[in-house]
Image: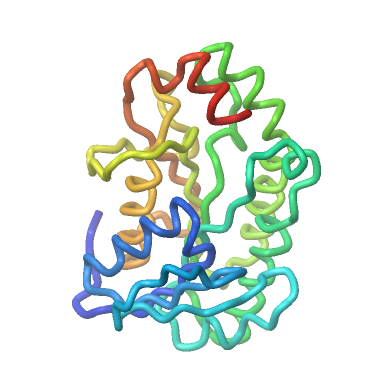
Length: 236
């Protein structure tokens, strides 16, 4: 990936206290960028790093224009919980929330947007059967929201958007050896680390790589991370 950034950027990160959001904030600061971290509720354990500004904002209710104003790029790390009640009726963070972010960006003249989707929007034929059955069923409505989000993004050619499609997300340190290819992850992979995803989206914010595209990101992981026990613990 070509780095066209020669000076620190101001990056707005929505969902900054989530698993991917925290990693994105850390990756952005490690690369010298200023961060405006937007969360529904500002966490109590905020860093005293002067390069991070914490902002409270509700993407479904608030005027987001002040939050994105003067940004060089906006990163949406919005996500929903995976408890059964939420998955049965997920809040429209991906669809309506991303629409609100786009509206604010267009009003403020901000062009670069990176959002998080999923490879399963394109195909759900990844992973062992004991993963596919519960995960694809439990997350069906979330994937449908992501599909709607992507359709809405395609209707906004004036924005330099990228919708990144990871596999099944997991914890773990950043590796930097992830595979990126168009649209879907390789058929022999299923997992993506939050930290690797964050590293990739921060690097995307520095460039115009993958504009109006859906790059998929994953890496090989130990079989234990797609075992029946792992699926049960992480989904249920």
